[in-house]
Every structure is written in structure tokens, then in C-alpha cells.
Amino acid sequence: MQVRLATLIDKARGRLTIKPIDATHDLEHHKNVAANCQKIIEEEHLSVNPQNILIAAWWHDVESQRGETNLLQKEMRKLGFEQEDIESISNIIHLHTFGEKPETNEAKVLFDADKIEYFNPDRIRKALKDAKNGLLPILILRKHYLEWVERHEKILESFNFETSKKIALTNLPRTLSEIKEITSFLETNNRIG
Image 1: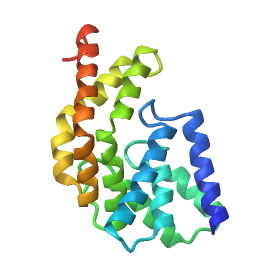
Image 2 (image 1 turned 90 degrees about the horizontal axis):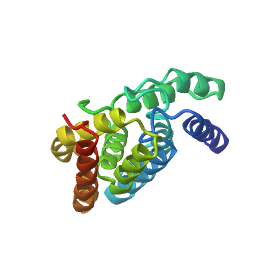
Image 3 (image 1 turned 30 degrees about the vertical axis):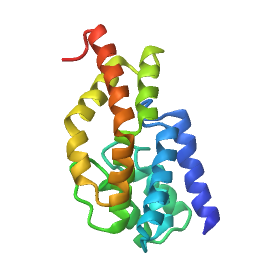
């Protein structure tokens, strides 16, 4: 079981290293989401399938931000995973998208763990640095910035676990400071509106 799990995580890491969706949905983001999942599970004392959540955390944005899992399902079948686990993990990933309403604790964990990243000041700082260095197109930075401005209050209200909300609120002052830096950068580059 551990070999199959390690193989799937290694495949996700490889794809995220070679071809991430963008600089904000890279290997570091997925590593953080996996760590957030573990923290939520531990702090909330949840009785869940940690393997399925861990796989979902590492694969949630590998194929797209919309929760597609075709490649993951193919890899899982090759490794001999049960169809029930394949469907469960695919469902967890599909329901991580903003606006979805996860129903199982596993899906709620991934949803929250991913949304905590909206309040990760280091991620926001890195996005600005990458835009300044040409690694993230300014239009993509603007898209993420506008999503953050539009969604951050809704996300705070949509967390499923108190642990998630606590992490987000703890990070909020530093996050707002980083967002202010992006605002200045986008205004300077006439990309805010």
C-alpha cells in the first residue's frame, strides 16, 4: 500500500515540477495543501481515510484547477487501486473547487486545506516575486489577485473546520500586507482594473 501511495505522490511531484498549471499552483502549493490536510485531520481529530486525502492533496491541481482526474484515475488503475478508492479520490478532488459544497469529511478536509492557501502570505509574496521576474505572467497574477479580492470573505465563511478558519485568520494581517504590495505593483503596471 505504501509503495503505491509513494508512487502516486512521486508522479504528481514530477508533473508539478515539469509542468505546473502556473507558478501559484506548483509543487510548493501542493506540498502546503498536503500539510494543511494533515494539520486539519490531527487538530479536528477526524476519523477519515488519510491515504485518499493525501493522494487528493497531491493531485488536486495536477490536471486542472477544475478537478479533472483522468490521468490520476489511469495511474491508479495501473497500480491496482480499488475502483471505490479511485471514485472516492476523484470525488474529493472534484469538490475542492471554489463554489462546490463538499459533503464527506475527506472532501471537506481538502476543500479547506486548499482554501487556506488563499491566506498564505508566503504564497502571495512568491506570486508577486515570480511576476516581477517574468515567471508568472502579470495577467495571471491579476487574475489571482481579483479572485482573492472577490473570494476571501466568502472563503472565511465557507470553511468546514474551526482549525481552517483559525489558520486563515492568524495569517490574515500578513496576507493583507502582501495583497497591498500586489495592488501597488498592478497599479504601476496599469493592470488593476
